[in-house]
Length: 133
Image (cartoon, rainbow, N blue to C red; front, side):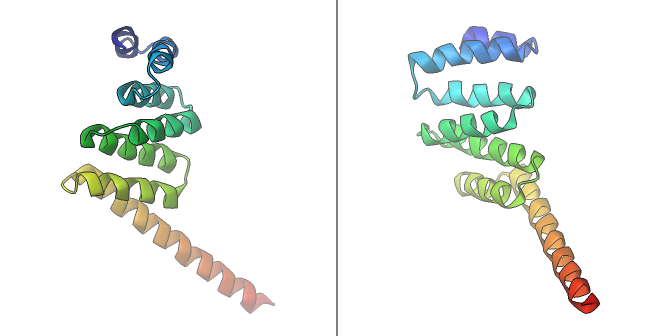
C-alpha cells in the first residue's frame, strides 16, 4: 500500500495500480486498497474500473468515512460518464453517511437540476414530434 501511495503521489498511476492490486490480492477485503485503486483508475480515465473499485471499497468498509468517500467518488465517475441517475443515487448514499458534506450536496443538486432539464427537453421534443405528425 505504501509503495502504491508513493507512486500515486508521483503521478505514476499505472505503477500505483499494480501495487494496490498486490495489496488487494493479499487481502481482498482491504477497503482502503480498493478505494485507492479506484482513485488511480479514475486518474487514468478508466472510469468503469474505478466505479467497480469504489463499489468494492464501499461494500468492504465498516468505516463511514471510507464508505462515504467511495460513494462520493463513484458519483463523480458516473457523472463524468453522463450517467446522471446513477450518480444521483451514489451521492444520495454518500449523504446518508455524512449529511453535512456540502460538496456532495452541491453535486447532487447540480445533477438533479441537469436531470430535470433533460426530462423537460425530452418532453418538449416529444410534443414537437407529435405536433409534426
